[in-house]
Image 1 (tube, rainbow, N blue to C red):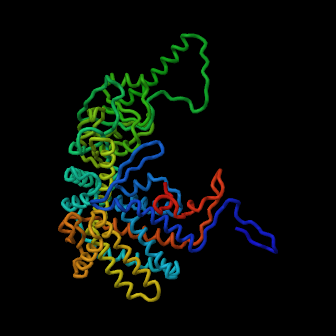
Image 2: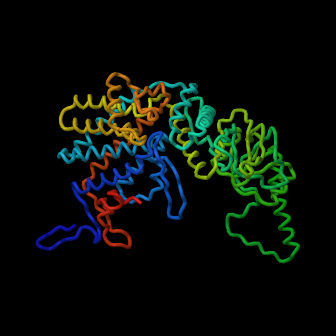
Image 3: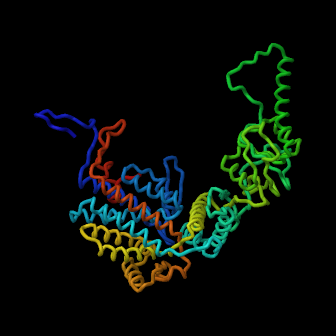
Length: 548
């Protein structure tokens, strides 16, 4: 890029930089974003396929989860990275619907490209998309149905929908029951649900049916000393965020010892200090010590002699869960140990699960934290189950918080599409075209559901549209029977927030990508100018921009 003054070129950009402008920049960005959407599109719905991702060191991930696929892919293109952000936002906010959000964003851009070819200005399209997204939010709220946090039947259906198509079909009934039980257990009185208090512990071995819920916390650690008791009933629990060892000085200090008996005195003093610390712990009445830091060998011996069950190097998140389950306060200093800060549990015991020792803290008075132990035949099965459970836990939590849900199976998208076309007709100017494009783009969801199930997408869409035009707002696509059915009766339901968030973030990403008309890429480190493929040219596999 150079400016020409009186025949003398003045270089503004560094050598090796590359600039793409106007329509080229837009089509490059849109192509990259569409490629990301097409990468996850086949995973949508109950009949979606899985992806196998192999990283640079050969680790394999097999998954159906949109956000996991996009996180594992090594994506280079800046516009493609924005699509990954859409999925991450959806995952952070709701936990499910990541594929939906990305697919909708990709389709919005595809429709926008058609408008750009008809010389509609990008800012006009962006304005229309914003209007349509705002209207869609209103319409979803009208479609939403109330659900009570005590309505376990409906919450189970919501969990069921989130898990369908994620490799958990074999024991779905068992798992959804565990999920609903876990969420109702940890929900606060004011209706907030923090799924961090549900710990999912993965153990390879056994079958999916062997998965269970523990009303309390399971720590994947064993006792520090074999002489400690394996089981303690009515246990007083001390949670400590400080090392049980002698204090080292803050500043660098040197101790000079001149004779062997001085060394012995020094060692004796060390032991005495540790003994004093252990005495403090025992004096408080604690029978179980859970320590985030280390426990010295000598301390282990004295704790075992006193009949205290101790665990060390426990994660901070586990301490937080234990604190909530047992009512104990996490103490950060040995001097602050006090009987009033201890927690209570009816039973603390060490048990073998899948060949490994684990500490179970159960029978608490009001455990506002629980643990799901997930079992499965292979590591990949257990990992995918874990992801399915995470999604289900999050959506049930969101449904309990918002107390609103909508029908699934593509029914809200078809209804929104219909209503947005009516809304477009009431608008003036070219933004009407953009709102129509938005309405058409939403139909990508039922279309994809049909395609992934091997059905004819056009026949299915026509059938769905006619059902909705006849006033059946909850008609969605039953991919197993290949026809439009009432999704409420079929029990295919999702929290309202899955849809509102997916449409909002998809629209925002599409608008942001559309408004870019100039891509200025600096030269790569250690290399010359980036190739046209790096800039979003249609290099790579099957007309896809390189993303891997």
